[in-house]
Length: 492
Image (cartoon, rainbow, N blue to C red; front, top):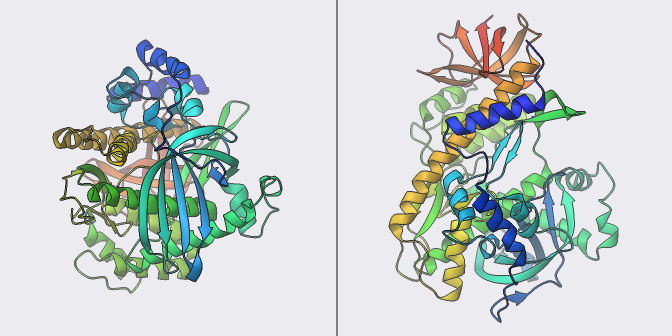
């Protein structure tokens, strides 16, 4: 087998996207339309607030160039916090019904593969004109929330504003500093008030998280594989670990997504919601808990599940990531749904909840550069702010929700296929080796396991009888085929 270079891996990704009904490249019309957006005059309106003076900042991965959100906070009396999340106004550069919008509506998401990213929007937009870069004035949609000391969001509003990113920070450096393991990021010395902002953000994120956990939000710790390249050559697939800064941003975005859903409901708008219904295989989760001496209710119960998970985190921190992965697999995938318009002033009541996050009426709204549902929600928000009619009919929203769910699944399959191709190449000289593995899938289509080094999944083609999600097993590597993304094991 010839060593695979990144060009081969990219070709596998392109073919996988085409097979799954995704467009790997932009049409010339879309690229030209995106380039023309450079010439568009910035929108001016008295309804757009000027908030450039605030200490806005971003936290993201070291190499991220498509920055979707900034935040800033202000301490209030009695332990409350005024929290502002600014989301890039992508809609201002992407015309609804245009060529760029057509590509985004078709793919519905950026696709992140081991061969590279296939962005939902041309990079002239996503990594430049619509990215909230440090030092660049940008239009945004701001979600303002008042967070009480107990983590409840007592008030929220949504409006448009001009913002300025004062500091582009990274997850690893912020997390290490907050944990007392590294010196502060250099921007803390050059941006007045930034250190206080980070500490206040860390505190309010903890309050938001604690409130959700009292309602049954699942405190899991799943690991994903991160391709590692040296001199352009793939050398490993390593865990992309969670950390304190990633949790901080996740907590803020969950709060903002809930506030946008409530805002649209209050305005009487039909909208898109992100939901996760009752777990797909609660019975198996009950069995896993019983193996640790814990009896879960016979019917899905998020608070009871989180108590079990919290206890296992303390009892077996080393094995908690594997348990988290098993539970997430058993919960099933999230999906999009169209929520009908309620009477104006009715904030909740759609019944579209998210089991894992323990929230109701939840929208995706904070990543419009890379998720089409977020761009749709942004257009709905801007119409609601302006007192205009909805830019989408309820029937259109239903079609969009169904298509986005389908394409999200296709994108995930492409990402897994390319990751397996990369893993097959890494393993091509290790046939016959035995690995410790966790069962991650057991269905008619096959039984699948994940090994840890390199971190990847493969199929058990011999000796899989009796294995179920969450079981551990010793498996021997039988065969690999990078071109076909096959990694085959037998039970040892």
